[in-house]
Image 1: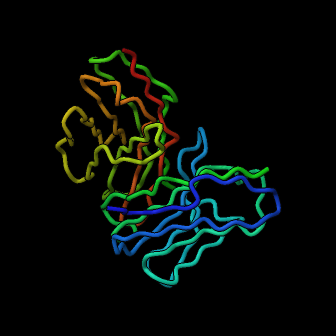
Image 2: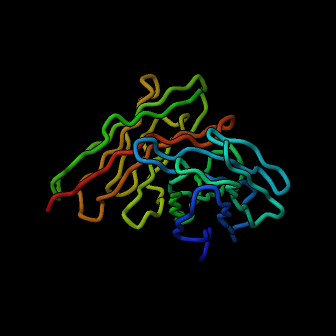
Length: 114
Length: 113
């Protein structure tokens, strides 16, 4: 069972370049999320989507954009990368937004901005 | 705002012993859900255990159990009979019908053979 697939697994990017992290889920979940993980800070929400066609800002949205054209895909775009965006990025999904259930995570994408 | 605090950046335990990881949270809500996730070196986020705030009984999953103290806003994880495979980063998380999931900073657990 694939669950959530993220790509790429790892990437090194020059500052100022753009980058799209891909995320696809096969569980038909309504809600999807992007988190970034930084040492000492845990996971912080960047953007979310509670259903196809809608998106919202999380705790740390600046410098990132997302789209949700369909149920399965939720790409995260960095328009002009900066070194502070060096992090591990996790895509996650859940049946519903802000419900009682757990989040299901992808395996993460490690991004290094030089 | 809801915040989740894990005050122990690192913990260690001897194999076969018991260890408790601490978590406190701040909320004004009465109905919410608490989770412990495990992140081994593979980076995968794995759900260990969850607790509904309206349930008084502490959740258990095999060697993992929680001590949920709602009035104190405390949600600690106890790992019994620790195994080498338990070595990982552990994250406490909070979620509600009004709020997205929020995570603590994590506790890195080392298991000594």
